[in-house]
Amino acid sequence: MFPGPLPFFPVGVMFDLDMAQGTLYIVSTPIGNLEDVTLRALRTLKEVDLIAAEDTRRTRKLLSHYQIHTPMVSYYTYNRLWREKYLLRELRGGKNVSLVSEAGTPGISDPGYSLIQAAIEKGINLVPIPGPSALISALSISGLPAHNFLFLGFLSSKSGRRRRQLKGVKGEPMTIVLYESPHRLLSTLKDILEVLGDRLTVITRELTKKYEEVARGKVSQLLDKFARAKPRGEFVLIVEGKL
Image (cartoon, rainbow, N blue to C red; front, side, top):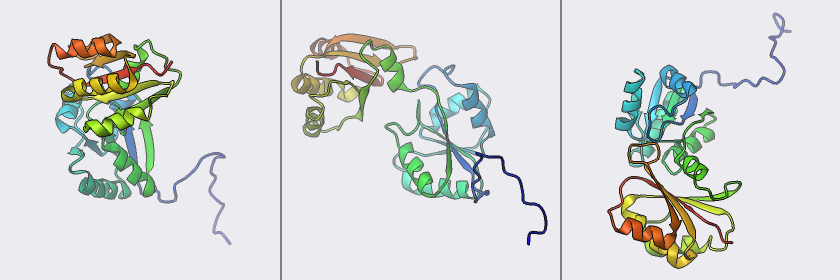
């Protein structure tokens, strides 16, 4: 027999049997302008025990701006494997951790995806703190259909494989969205022109930052434009789907 009355749990409330485990918060941070951060994100960054940041220098600017003094560790592509073990150990020991990417929403074309997968496998509770995303910001001002779209992230750095990736979506009617770095922008535009044709395209650069730029036109026009001056910054390309 039980020594006393059973505890009352409200209907619909789930409890983790391992109450000692912490929570991993997936926190979206500004892609440029430091004002583009939610109140919930700031509160979460203040209250967690640890922040895992892809770029600690960039994250430190945000924390300093809002006078947040939470301890921070680096978590990026080249230290990912051994840093994951440390973070999972902290989480399983009861620490709450915020994961932040270099900018925007973690897990989208950055190493955060690996930690999220590992946390799921270990039964760690995950909570998303939504906010800025370069992908959505660029798409929202593109003027191209956004009711459904195909996001490719970063294409391969090798032209042959990149062209094969583009051939795979050549017949896709949905709007195509991808990220690109400045030193590969021209070669990627050339491949898009040759594989997909001279489609209407929107290129955004350094969104929400001082030198924000939005360029619209056919691929050939944009290739000519960016060939005249060395591309700088981070780019989002939104390409018209097959008509």
